[in-house]
Amino acid sequence: MTTITRSFLSFVFFGIINNILYVVILTAAHDLVPPTTPKAIILLADILPSFLLKLALPFFIHRIKYRVRIICIVALSSIGMFLTSLPIPLAYVLLGIVLASASTGLGETTFLQLCHYYESECIHGWSTGTGAAGFLGAGMFLLFTTVFKWRVDWTLRAFAIAPLAILIVYQFYLPTTSRNLQLQESDINLINDEQIRFTLGSNTAKYFNLSNEPNEFELEGELESTQITNLKIHYKKTINKVIPYIIPYMLPLMLVYFAEYTINQGVSPTLLFPIETTPFSKYRDLYVTYGTIYQIGVFISRSTGQYLRLENLYILSILQMGNLIILILQSIFMYIQTFWVICAIILFEGLLGGAGYVNTFSQVRETTKESDREFALGCVGISDSMGVVIAAIVSIFLETQLCKYQVHNDKNWCTLL
Image 1 (cartoon, rainbow, N blue to C red):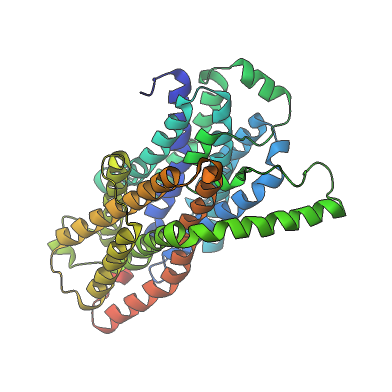
Image 2 (image 1 turned 90 degrees about the vertical axis):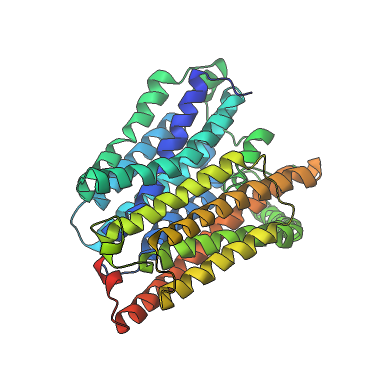
């Protein structure tokens, strides 16, 4: 049972703040781009920089002290969110999203490494915080902009202030342990901790040395020719070790994430009805509501995943792809006449997404030999990010075509978002 301590609460807070900006940006996508611009551009700007940065971090992150990292996280996220709130050209808004995305990637790696210097409950605190960030981010944005009628730009500026609290909690609330004191006096080495790697299953485990073989290269100073050769050998061995996990684990998880993020960013902006048949007065409220309902579904399934287990992961992939097809057809033919039915499908989509995540990594952990488990969790973790990146690219074209089709058939609601 998890013990509630100051350290645990600190990492819950770190997880919420670090991930909440990612969710807020996606929820606000319709407010950040012109009506005729695909909302998936926001998703691509929100996921790709973080993904690429986390791939590069292992090569230099150990040289940067934690206090410096925390300052960078706060600065990048605050500046990025502030830029997104300004009435400036789209290119500068996207720059703000890129900065916030880089902050999220750096934060995920940093706080997971920091868990190593505290009691084991802290990794669960981080997981709890990241899980709650989706529901809180989408829910708060919906509450402020739809219920309280706050202006979107002021809502985003309020979130831009939030990261400053990370520095305050780190400096004044997070307990200082003897291990943490040693940490602050020296450069940080990458951490080799099984408990961290289980949580790292979602994108980050790969940043640590997950193989059980000795490191074949050192990243101190400039790489010599022999080290470059060893690096090539290391990558070749790694690829060969990844192949057995592609079909049973990586492909089904990637399909789940591809389908759900294509729905969220490529299809849901076109799942509209005559505004008088909905509980809202503006079309943008429908989009925000869909995002919030989706996050509720994810939160529920991730929280209960340990009780509801599925052995065949492709069932989740097929069901999620089915949701995608149903909603694309709805966008074209509008055969579902009730807004609430679409909400139910979106909730089901979120439940499937959370279930795919939990069941995939639970199966990997339970069915893989202990000697291979750490590596397996790491390589499988990259598949969800790949699914999101592909979904963002597809959605840029999909939303545009669906909206054009609707306008051609005298339904121009998608242009009013």
